[in-house]
Image (tube, rainbow, N blue to C red; front, top):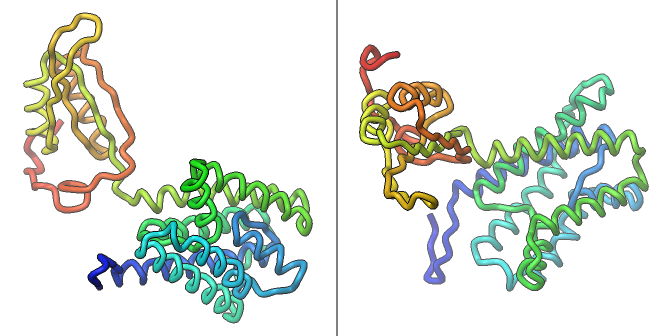
Length: 297
């Protein structure tokens, strides 16, 4: 990690992974989107429109469009964010330039459905990696951040609005049929980017309301080896004091947890929540080992 007295912190691993994400994104853009005449949202979509009408290489128009945006947004971005954004923008431009000169092609026999799936896959994986390591590729992210700071408009709304405008303008050079496959790519993109950002450590948060909480707690600890927290509760109607149990388990352990609760208290109220990411023992580093034959169902 590099540090200056300005509290600037730039990690080498972040820069490497942002560049890798840009490589994935650019590969999909060049070898799938451009090769199959699919549009794209945001600034990338604008570069494709410019490519069609003005014959300017997206590798260059990406820089041309982003440079003034980065200058304007200088006061709205922290030092780290600014460096990562500049790095992401330059990396994306470089890889777009590179992939156009590498003689590699994806033979999908002109199947536009597969093209839409692949476009969303490569774009989602690439962008997910970029965002996961704190980077952006500039563009509409900068515009959305400015609107949020100045006008109080949520970034999601601004990004969606800009994407709709760009996709609408893209109809000037692609057909409705191609636009439908572009929308398919956008849907796959949104799903893949969520998975990439959240990582592989999916989990479930479970809140259990039961008068038999001491026994349920002990069963979870001994049979599942998971940590448990007890939360003081007050019934809104009865005003009675009680205890709720909260724990986080992997999806594969959820059935076992339900069986534990049902065996102890069939009338227990159980609320199961989706946890986007779980960091800690048993999820991102080793879980205490248990005997294979002990406490099996």
